[in-house]
Length: 199
Image (cartoon, rainbow, N blue to C red; front, side, top):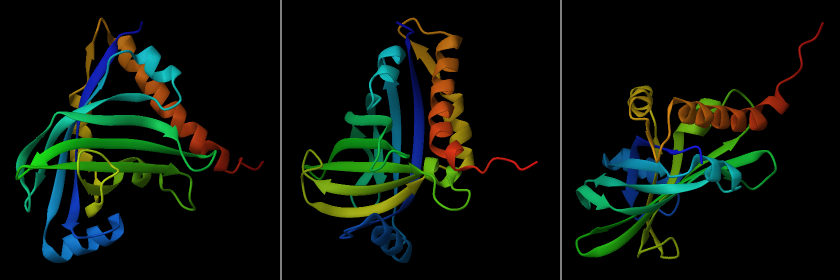
């Protein structure tokens, strides 16, 4: 076992109750001035096992800040998947899902980053943009009651890097292995679409 890692990631963006899609929620949230922040902690107990499984699952917990529902809302359980299979062979998904409660009611925040090579240089946007739906109830089977688009800015990315820690006997090589896996997956998605240089 190569040990494991943890890191903290904060994503924030325009978000609105009553919206049915992330795009509509982002537009409505901007108009209303309402934003949602997800403060998440990713835990990968066994990096070897994580890499070996195609869904690449890990643990997720954290807090939610969203003015209409409250701030510092505890989200003790969630789902994290990194580069799980997407809708096509050249697409991947990064999944972030958190269960929390507000006003005595359960909610489930379900977001995904859509990693695929579209026209233009979109790698940064794909890996830092979380399309998010808010479901009523304890899982994503509940009705969508809000939506929006969260993002990871440069400052948040630098903060994320500073939070990397090893667990379960991991060491610096564990972090290096994770880095090679992360950038290797990006290479698989984007490199085939890069034109070979002409001579």
